[in-house]
Amino acid sequence: MSDSELMNNGSLSLCAEFTLVAFSSLAELQLVLFFVFLAIYLFTVGGNLLIICVIWTAPSLHTPMYFFLVNLSFLEMCYISSVVPQMLVHLLVQHKTISVRGCAAQMYVFTILGLTECCLLAAMAYDRFVAICYPLHYTLRMGPSVCLKLAGASWATGTVVESVQTAWIFTLPFCGAGKIQHFFCDIMPVVKLACVDTSRNEIVLFIVSLIFIMSPCVFILCSYVRILVSILRMPSASGRHKAFSTCSSHILVVSLFYGTALFTYLQPKSSHTPDTDKATALMYTVVTPALNPVIYTLRNKEVKEAFRKVMERKLLRQMD
Image 1: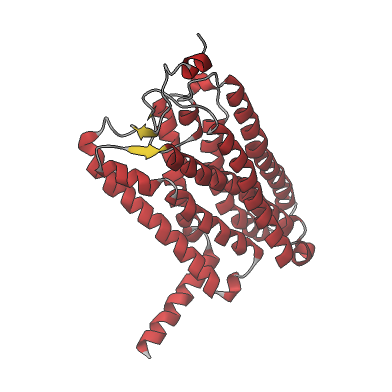
Image 2: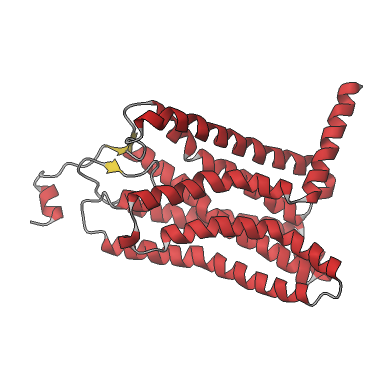
């Protein structure tokens, strides 16, 4: 008898809620993990808020590159907030359940922000490409309207594509115990719970991931090939160093983000295991957002200088 016939006969009951069991086997460590992840979460949100405030208050940073950095920092705060607060609650309670609607909402937000970041990193690569390869046309090519259109297109692409994909996933019937071998509602662990054949769904999900994750990645790679050629053609060593330093932070962020994303969403189903899924998910949901503020402050002289001036003005106002 097929799965659909079993459901029609009432032999299978649909899930009303899911149970996230990623940390259930670590009962003695859950309190320690709670404080570790809480500290990382507060650091990430605080660090990205600080970057946004510094850029907002420093006129010298009102440039396209930092406009995109503000978007990225805001996105990273939302990204980590879509996963970690619920994970913190589940580390403190015995019943680690989430409703099907709550799971769908989490997947909506998480996947939209993930794809938006892919597109935003591509927009940032284009900004660096124009700045280094066409410096005389930079102001014209990267005017305020162009920056707004690139940022808007990134958010629109993420919202439209992932809304359709997530809605499609939650048309599947989920039945059985409803135990998700993960700490949040990620795509593949949820799809595995469907009580129908999902092979076609998985093929479509793979194609969507291939198109909308790899396309920005290929664009970024092509941009940096052109950037590298332009840098190597510069006559002075100081000019080459300055040009490369403006790209180094972005290259690090792209490597961290795409390294885990490609490993997670483009590997075959047979390679997915609960342990590898959880390990890579912790990288791109917790570790990478926490590293971005560090990368863009410790490696960026302009941000550090602007932060120093902001603190000096604050101290002067307090002294007055």
